[in-house]
Image 1 (cartoon, rainbow, N blue to C red):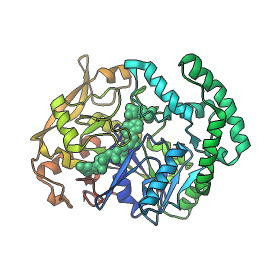
Image 2 (cartoon, rainbow, N blue to C red):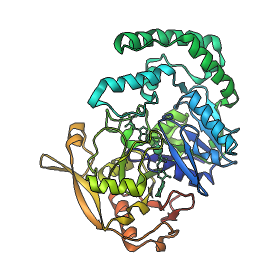
Image 3 (cartoon, rainbow, N blue to C red):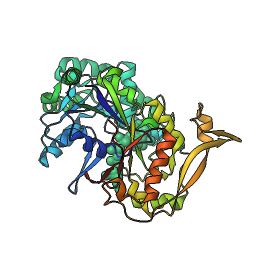
Image 4 (cartoon, rainbow, N blue to C red):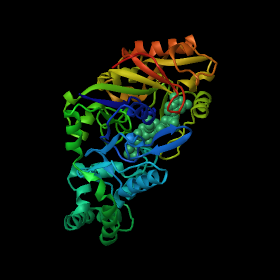
Length: 427
Ligand code: GDP
Ligand code: IMO
Ligand code: MG
C-alpha cells in the first residue's frame, strides 16, 4: 500500500503535528524526511501539551514506529533531551529508528548560524539559529559528519579534523570568534553516540519493508512549501525540501510509493522570520490573529506575523505537491471577525497575477487583491460535524476548496486531538 505525505503549504506552523497525530491513530509508521529541530510540532492530548522538534509525531501511539530518515539533520543533544523528556512523561520511545545516514548538527554549525545572521544585519533571514543552514551546507559540500560516524570513533575524529580546520579559519579570521576544540567536541559527541546507539538502524530499509508489506506509512513534513529551498521565497527559506517530492529523497522511496498527499493550511496565514508576505494583515488585524491563535513560535517563542489566507500561494502549493486533499486548521481562530479577507490574486505594476509569479521581484512587491467573505461571530470549537458549523464557516471552506481546486477533508477547530470536523471522505 503506497504511503501518505503530509506537508505544510504555507510558511510553517500550520498544525502539521496536530494532523499527523490525528492520522497516526491508524498509521503503522511516521517518518520525518527533512529539516531538523527548527521544527516545532505541537500536539495536545487530553489537555497535555507535547512540543516535538525531532522525534516524529507518531511516537505518542504505542503501535506506531517513528523513523528519522536520512534527509533530516540531527542535533544529537536535542534528540537525547527530547527522548528523555518523552520517557519522563511515560511515552515509550524504544521503537524510534534513527537513520545512520542523517547528518549531524555540530557545535560550529550553531555558532555559524548565529554569526552569519549577525553579519547579514538588517538583511538577516530570521533563522531559528539551530544550525540548520550550515549543517545542510556541509552536507552538500561533502564535509558533513553523519549519525553513523558516532559509532566509529576513528572515522568520526578523522572527519571532524578535516571539517574543523576550515571552520576554525572561518570562525577566527572572518567572524573574529574563538576557535572550536576538536577534543572537547569528540568527548561530547562520543557520549551522545553511546546514548543514541540503540536507536541507530537501517531506517530506509525499514520504511521500504513496511511499504512492501502493505503497512501504512506517513511521511511527516516539517517547515512548509513556501519555505522550500527550491520552490519557496528564496532566500527567505529553510535549507531543505519540505515539499512532498522531498519525502522521496529524504526517506528513500520512489514517487510511486506515495499516493495520498495531504496539504495542511491554516484558515489564515502566518510567517515567522523575514521575507515577503503579500497577504500580511494590518497591525490591528494581525494582533487580533496573534491573540486569538496564540501565534508564538513553538521553537523560538517569536511572535508570528499574521495575515489572510493566500489562495495564490495555496494553488501554487497544491500543484507543487500534487495535493490530493487539504486540511484547514485553526478555523476557530477566525470566529471573532465580522468579515474575512481572502487573497485571490496579486497585483504588480498594473498586472494581475492569479498564478504564483515566476520571479521573486514580482512576488516581493506584489500587492494582494482581496475578496471579502462574511465571518461568523460565534464559537465553533465544539463543532464535530459539518452541520455543527455556521453556514458562513462552511461557505468559507467551500471557497478555499474552489480556489485551490482541492477537496478539504478536515477542518480543525481547536488544538485538542478531538477538535476536528470531517468535511469530505477523501481517501
Ligand atoms: P506545526 O509546526 O505545523 O506542527 O504547527 P505548530 O505546532 O508549530 O503550531 C500550530 C499551533 O496551533 C499549535 O500551538 C497547535 O496546538 C495549535 N493548533 C493546531 N490546530 C489548531 C486549531 O484548529 N485551533 C487552534 N486554536 N489551535 C490549533
Ligand atoms: P515547523 O515544522 C515556521 C523559518 C525560520 C526562518 C527560515 C529559515 O514547526 O512548521 P532555519 O532555521 O530553518 O534556517 O530558518 O525558516 N522556519 C520555520 N518557520 N515553522 C517552522 O517549522 C520553521 N522552520 C524554519 O523562522 O524564517
Ligand atoms: Mg511549528
